[in-house]
Image 1 (cartoon, rainbow, N blue to C red):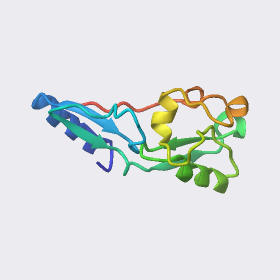
Image 2 (tube, rainbow, N blue to C red):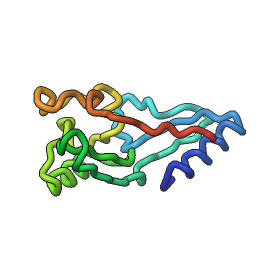
Image 3 (tube, one colour):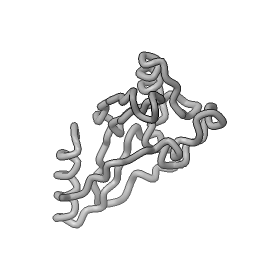
Image 4 (cartoon, helix red, strand yellow):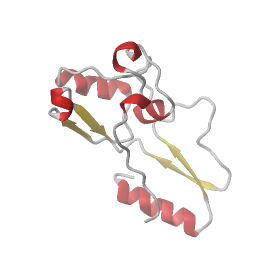
Length: 127
């Protein structure tokens, strides 16, 4: 999928056909929690939008990301804006899974956990 409308169409199809739905961002999951029998896999690796709001929180700034980003991509974008992001230790880890999973990393003492830095999230369903 390339956008939320594509994901919504996939979810609707799966619901209409009583299929299990799995979602994987970067696939960085050694426990294989993104699989189920007789289901559909939604890979979000192509959802890579980036939008900065440098005025948020009195100039501290914020970034809105598509769910397919890894830390190497976002860290690069942050350097272009002279910003530091809460991030994990491995650059190949996906930002979304790491953040919603708690998000421990080297900058936690300064920037907080990944989950602490989520301002909002868009949930996509069949509608």
